Length: 350
Image (cartoon, rainbow, N blue to C red):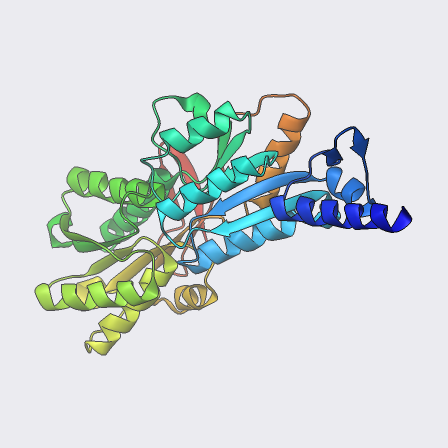
C-alpha cells in the first residue's frame, strides 16, 4: 500500500507541474494527497507573463526585471512566454494561462488593437490582467485591472522641446530643420506616442518633417532605413530615432555614407536623437556627442507590477494608469533644461 501511495503522489506531482499552476492539492475521489512540493507550490502567487518579444535592449532589460522580481524566493511561480513580436503568439499564451488557472496575467502587448476577445476570456475566468509598457485599445477599460509604463507622447514632447531649445539657441531657422523619423514598430504605444510628439511639434514650429519610416525598434532595420533615406534626401540634418537600437544603426549608416554625426547641423553634421537610455553603446555615443539627446524610458517594471499585485492581493484598487517618472539626457551643454506640458525638466549628463 505504501508503494501505491508513493506512485499516486508522484503522478499527482507530475500533473501539478504539467498544468503549471499553484492551486490546492489535487484530489482523486475523496482522497487528497499532498506532497511537500505541492504544499510549497500552493503557497506561491502564480503569474503568467506574456512578453511581446526581445527586439531591443530595452525589452531585454524589461524581461530581466520581471524574471528577477517574480522568483520562487519571493513567493511567486512565474510562467514566462516570449511572443516573438507576434500578437497571435501572445493570444495563445494568454489562453494557456487561463487554462492553467494562474492568479494574475501580465501582458506587454505587441500592438494596441485586437485584444478584446482574449481579455474578455480572462475576465470571465476572474483572472486580473495587468498591462505593462504598452496599452491596449479597448472600449471596455474593465477588461484589464491596471497599466504601468511610460508616457510615450510626453517623451516625444520632451525631445521636441530639446530640439527647439537647441536650434533656437544656435539661431537655426525652423524651415532649415529637416527631420526624418525612424519609427518603432507600427501600432505599438511607444511608436504612436513618440511619433505624435514629433509630428505635432513639427507642425507647430514649422520644421520640415520629411519622412516617417518604421525601423521596428531594431539596429538592423534602423541602419537599413537610414541608408535608404540618405539616398533619397540630401539635406537631412536630424534623425529622430524612436529607440537606442535604431539610433546605433542610424549612426552606422550615416558614417558609412561618409557623413559626420554630431550636433553642429549648421555646418553639415547630422544630429541623431534617441529614446530609452538603456543600451550601453548608445549611452557611450551620448557621452561622445554622437547621440545628441536621449529621452529616458525606464524598463524596470518588475517591482512596479509586484506593487500592483500586492495591492490587489490586499483587496485595494490601484490607480488604473501608473506612469513612470523619467529623465532626459545630453552631454551638450547648450540646453540646461526644457519645458514639456508646463513642467520643467533638467537635462542630465548621460
